[in-house]
Amino acid sequence: MILITGASGNVGREVLKQTAEAAARTGDRVRAAFQATAGVVVPPGVETVALDYNEPETIRTALKGVDRVFLVGPPNSQLPALERKAADVIAHSNIRQLVKLSAMGGRDATFTRQHADSEDYIGSKGIPYTFLRPNGFMQNAVIYNARPINEHNAFFGSEGDGRVSQIDIRDVAAVAAKILTCPDPERDGHIGTAYTLTGPEALTNFEIAQMLSRELGRDIQFINLPPEQLRPALLGAGVPTWSADAILDLQRLYREGKAAAITDDVEQILGRAPTRFAEFLADHRSAFEVRQKAAS
Ligand SMILES: NC(=O)c1ccc[n+]([C@@H]2O[C@H](COP(=O)([O-])OP(=O)(O)OC[C@H]3O[C@@H](n4cnc5c(N)ncnc54)[C@H](OP(=O)(O)O)[C@@H]3O)[C@@H](O)[C@H]2O)c1
Image (tube, rainbow, N blue to C red; front, side, top):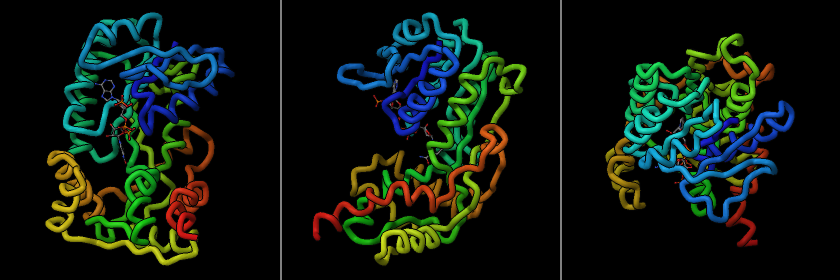
C-alpha cells in the first residue's frame, strides 16, 4: 500500500493522480492523506485518511498496512518541524521506502536549507529514502503570476536575468509515481538516492515574458524590482514575514545564477525528456486569459 501525504497540495494532488494511474496497472493499493477528508475527491479505488503531522496518532493510523510513503511538507516555516514529526513515526514503522519531496539548491537558500535539514534528519533515522529535489515549478507562473498578468499584463520579481531550469510539476509527479510503484526500488538503485529534477532548459523571466507574449498574442512584461521594493509589496499582499524573506532569498539565489543547472535525472527515470516551458504554457494558456475573456 502506498500512502500519499499532502494530497490536497499542488504537488501531492498530481502525485496522487499519476500514482493511482500507475497503481491501476501494477495492482498496488493507494491511500491519500488529507488534513481534512470531508468532501475530498480522489481517483477511483483510492482510500482516504485524515493525517496531521502534529498528531502522531494520525500518522500511525495512516501508516497501517502501508509500505511506501510519499512525504510532502508545506512551504512555510513549519516544514522541518512537521517532517521531523512524520519521520519519528515512520522510523518505527514497516516502511520499505520513503519518497520525500525536497528541493534543488542545498543549503544555499532558506527554503532549500529547510529541505536539506529534513533530508539529514530522515537519513539519521535510518529510514530507506529516495529524495526528489526539484528546481522551481513552472506552475508558479500560474499560481503566483497569472493574477498580475491578467490584471496588468506584467509580473514582478527580483531575480533579474538569472536563469532557472524550472520543472513541470507533472514531471515531478511522473517520477514519483514511477519510483513509488517500482517493484524493487533497492535493485533499481532508488534507495538512498537523491534525484535532482530540472526542466530541459534554463530561462530568464525576461525570456518567459517573451514566450507569454507570443503565446497570448499580447505584450507581457517582466518587471524586475529591487528586493527592498519587492518586500513591502509581498507583505502588503498578505505574505507572512518569514515567507516574504524566504521568497526574496530564493530570488537572490536565482539572480546569482545558482538555479540554472540542467540534469538528466528526469529523462533517466522516465525514458523521455522533461516538459519544455513552451509546452507548459500552451497547456495552461487559459489561466492567462481570464480577464481578457471577461473584458471581451
Ligand atoms: N514552489 C516551488 O517552486 C517548489 C520547488 C521545489 C520544492 N518545493 C517544495 O514542494 C513542496 C510542496 O509544495 P506545494 O506547492 O505542493 O505545497 P502546498 O500546495 O502548500 O501543499 C502542502 C500540503 O501539505 C499539507 N499540510 C500542511 N500542513 C500539514 C500538516 N500539519 N499535516 C499534514 N499535512 C499538512 C497541506 O494540506 P492542507 O491543504 O490541508 O493545508 C497540503 O496538502 C514544499 O515542501 C516546497 O518547499 C516547491
